[in-house]
Length: 200
Image 1 (cartoon, rainbow, N blue to C red):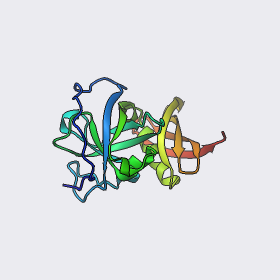
Image 2 (image 1 turned 120 degrees about the vertical axis):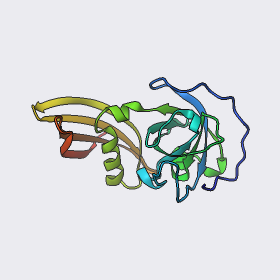
Image 3 (image 1 turned 45 degrees about the vertical axis):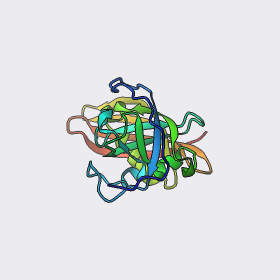
Image 4 (image 1 turned 90 degrees about the vertical axis):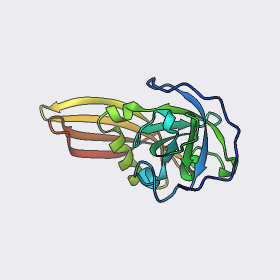
């Protein structure tokens, strides 16, 4: 188990099981520093600490990506499910402290009302999540808060290009980065990728 923060919270009404694509779930987020062992065997440090624990009753799976939005300031983070919290209701999540802070709030807040958006399209679009990880490595100190699939084109019979536009936020600025990947659709092997900052 891992340490929880010191803040107590009142139980909220449970929401029904979440099975809709892009359904916005009204919920609450708390935070944790994480721990050495997780239920998913994925470390809290994965995904640049943009990680989360969920209720086993939520329907979310290990390794799944969720978008979490702070409705008060519209800040968003994309987090990876790495652990579970057995007694949490389905609409309560426990973010790593860094992800909680990336929503633009002080950890002393303790409990934050959030919107949770399951993002199955990150898995279905072949390299969206792959490029998110490269963007986070290539832009230290920035958090990926949103992304848009820009399209796919067949370059040749064994080459396909996909492009994505990512929004990155730091304490100083917000920037846009375009990521593209060329891969062989027959083998799904990456041939090349490119990241470039977009003029705003």
